[in-house]
Amino acid sequence: MLDVSFLPLSHIAALPLSYEWDDWDPYEVVGEAEEELIDRLAGLSFRAVAAFAIGCAEWVVCRFARVSDDPAPLQYLEACWAYIMSDGFEAPPEMEDEDWKGEVRGAMNLALMTVLNTLYGFEDESPESEAAFADRVALHVLNGDAMYIAWRENVLQRLAAAYRRDEADPFGPVVPREIINPQVVTAAEQAEALVAQFLAKIDVRANPFLLPFDEEE
Image (cartoon, rainbow, N blue to C red; front, side, top):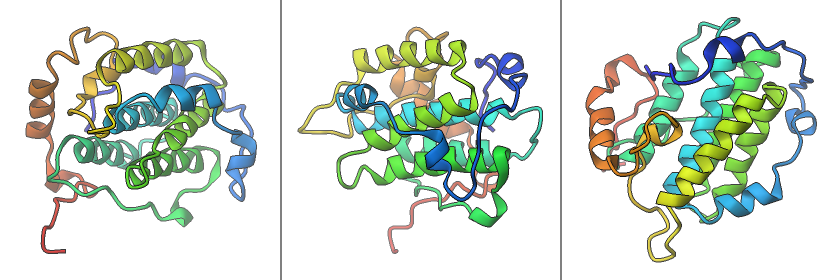
C-alpha cells in the first residue's frame, strides 16, 4: 500500500463534505481544467505529467480517509505508479461505475479514471489536459484548500526543473513517487534508486490492480 504520511492527512480528512456532486454529470459541477495549467503540463515529460495526475488523485483519496476505509483507490494508484515506472506492468482497468457512486465513492472514481485517461493520453501525445482535470477534481472536493494549492505549485516547480519534455523522447526518464513529496529534496537526483526501491516493495498478490505485462497478448 502507498505511504501517504507526507500528506496533511488530519487536516484534509477533516474538511467538510460541502461540495456539489452529480453522479449523472460530475463534469458539470467540477468545472473545466485551467488552460494555464494545461500549458505548464505540456512542457513536462509524459511520465512527469502522469506523476502529477496521480499525486492529485492521492489527495482526493486521502481527503476521504474518515469516511472510507476501502483500500482499492490507493491500490489502484499504486498500480498506476508501477505502470509509469516499469514496462513490466499494464495500466489498470477501468473501475465498475455502478460500484462507485455518490459524493465520496463517485468523486474517488472520477479521480482514478482521470488518472487512467492521462495514461491513455500517452497514445495521442496529449496527456496534459486530463492531468490538469485531475487537479480540477482535487480542487473541487478539497474546497480549494490552501495546503493543496501550495503542494501543487511546489510539485509543478520540481517537475519543471527536472523533467522537461524532449520531443525526441516525450516519455522522458523514470519519475520516482518521491517527486510529489516536497520533503524529499533530492528525489530527481535519486530517481533510479528510488524507483527500484518502489518496484521491489510492491506485492502483485496483494494488489488486484497490479497486472504484469503479458507479451503474448
